[in-house]
Amino acid sequence: MPASGSRPGVLVTRPEPGLSETLEAVSAAGWGAYASPALLITQQSLRVASPRFATCVLTSGQAVQAAQAALPLTCPLYAVGDRTAQRARTAGFAAVQSAQGDAEALAALIIQKQNPAEGSVLLLSGARQGMALAARLRQAGFTVVRRVAYSARPVRQIAPEVLQALQDGRIKVCLFFSSESAAGWIAALPVSCRAQATRTRAIAISQAAAAVLKAAGWAEIVVAKTPDARAMLAALGRPGTTTD
Image (cartoon, rainbow, N blue to C red; front, side, top):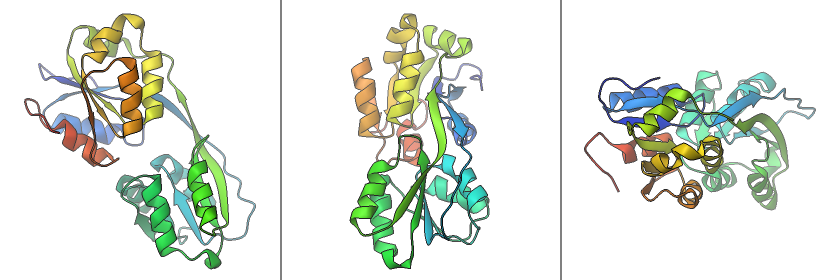
């Protein structure tokens, strides 16, 4: 989505699902929205050779498709945040609870609400993700079966129109939705554009993402108050305003 008119530009680096709705929200707030997804997502074929699970845990909205393919819609779900929970409900799952936060909040919610004696837990995550959450739940007495629902790899190139907008100074703010996507997008950024990119205001979803940006040379970094898209957009605000 190219920016419109003379609006100051905002770069959105998250992939689908979530990219389109964020672009729309950025545009509705009065900014020019630029799409530059940092990760390429590949859904994995999920094989679950296990008895019926007591519940399923989703660490990302990217895992909803795998859950839909592998589980009955009556299976209770725990989702890391509200957007992931909403996607699960839209997919047809009836019993969905949101941790409204990060992996730590998700673990706390499951431990509070779920009895390990009720049965095993299916944890759906990305490749190389979800191990710490699985370990935390096992420490609490749960039998956890972790499966990779999707893989994410960094893009190799950034669209020419995005690079031109950076060089022209039209992009004022960059949104980064994970430390992995921040690192991937920066790696794909040509050296000739790095000075312009690091002069923008960066909004990071977490301290981990902010650390990646700081190491890359960003001076102005705002960390969202909570690790979700709503807080990211609140930190963005409208053109001509700033938020802490």
